[in-house]
Length: 369
Length: 169
Image (cartoon, rainbow over all chains, first blue to last red; front, side, top):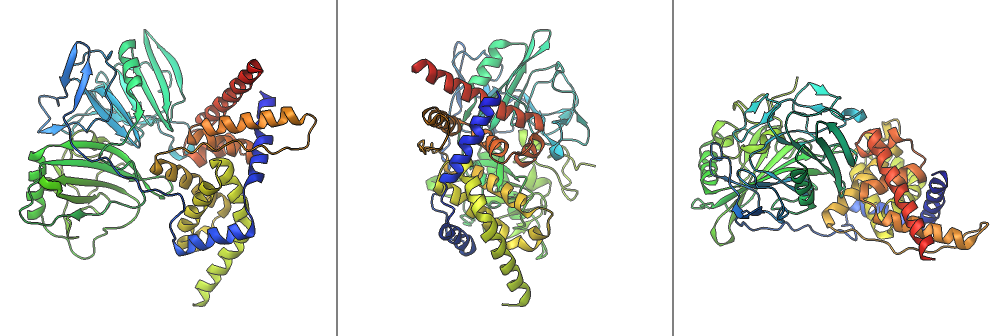
């Protein structure tokens, strides 16, 4: 192994010498940085738009994705860009697509949402968040409920003993700080982790067919939301009073650790009902004064893109740290019960942290101590 | 231009002329591409400039900007949605066995070109910059164990690469 390490050292030193770091290049790079001239190889990232029926292939035939019968409230799954393998075991409700950054994974549609191991302050990864968030946003402290977890701190209580702990229910972790490989958790339970680009996807279950099918469905994917933004989302689109939306895409973002950009945490497609409800709610919401904090950097954000007929659209932007919701004219409105409940459904309540001024029960992650 | 702004500009220029060459070489090792290296450094400097007063007062402004280079690189790559695999550039170096050295160098470059981005950054930090795993984890925002795992997998990939070449010969 030592020889291999030495090979890396020698080759990388040689590689570095190939770089053109002449004074002329240095001056050019610094001058471009000063003037804000676009970088040479940067290319625009175009999100794939479009709404389609979410169809998944399950054992024994084709099934249309459905939300849980008791809590869907008109919600539909994100537009899939890939399907789970045809060998996927049949699951009640089928499968739904879960997105994190630029990776998508199909998980059983009735599973809730939770946390995944994350390294807080550079220490060993810990799991911060007991309880599983349900479709309607409330969390249930029941370890027998399966869930899909993201590396988000859901509570002030963290557990560092997750690595070899046998769970009482299956889980999928997307983006967890977990090394690839398989871990025998005992009793027939196995946690298997694979890397999809830079994102680790882990599945723990005692059902090997389910584990393999979920892992096989993990791919880099672009949904309706851009996986990463340079700056916080901005409102836009039509301000027409007669705008009638037919769907709504919810994109949740948080600033990356260096505040350089914003990563996609969650995406969900909602139907006409919630979209029309939101338009009406914002129209009637109290405008905020001029001292609000819209366009501040950092924080957590939601872009709510409503689509109408004929290519029309309207983007509302939610700033969780303000907190406010901004319409396309730039007017800010309070984030209250009416402007929240129609879009804060499902897993978004396990990725965005609430604000003391947002008084909406069972929505978002409660303020941490 | 007032005195404070002139002072900041002068301090940044002095730092840039001294440190940007090394940052470009580091970025080249991380990206394997001159254009991407320049882009990553430019993006980091763009972010650093408006807050240079604060950064320059930090204990280690180099480390701060280097972290920005790493993140800018990962960000640019993710946004572009593509992964440019650089052509292995053969540069003969002095050594006991030039032919073997070139083969190993090419193998390292091929392995690096095929690594996921964070793994490649970990390899660059470990073997080009001699950073320990705790520092690599801190720079990548992951645990020390995960950083170690990234590097270990790269070493395994190089072993396979060299083994395949031996069997091909």
